[in-house]
Length: 135
Image (cartoon, rainbow, N blue to C red; front, side, top):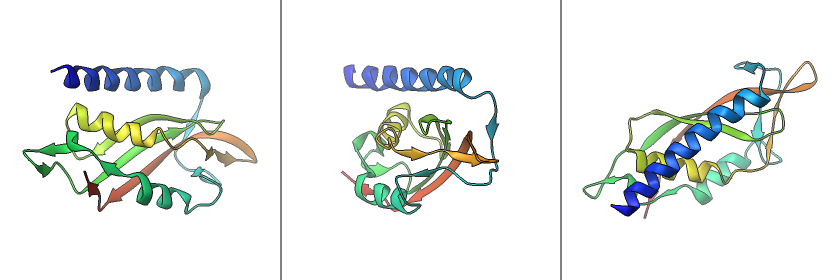
């Protein structure tokens, strides 16, 4: 019971902190830009991060069976390269599983923001991820 409560509180904390932070730093959020935001120093660093770190724990199992084998995640990268507003678009998952996935995404600290007309801007990114390792 305590474990569920901790994950639920973590989920609500992360969700609300991202929503409020975005309103302060991003006056406009772009969906298309001249140069997209990317993780790390090269465009394939995110693929390497996912391969090395995306191991979902037992919170994403339903009676021993994975709740999913792929997912679609939408998130915001602000003008400073900070990861904000992580949203699991597909599939519908438990709050504990969502908190676990968000915790993995929050480990990605070194984002290069998107650029529009030579200036850094806030932009949404959508990432499809599949083929997980299960713990």
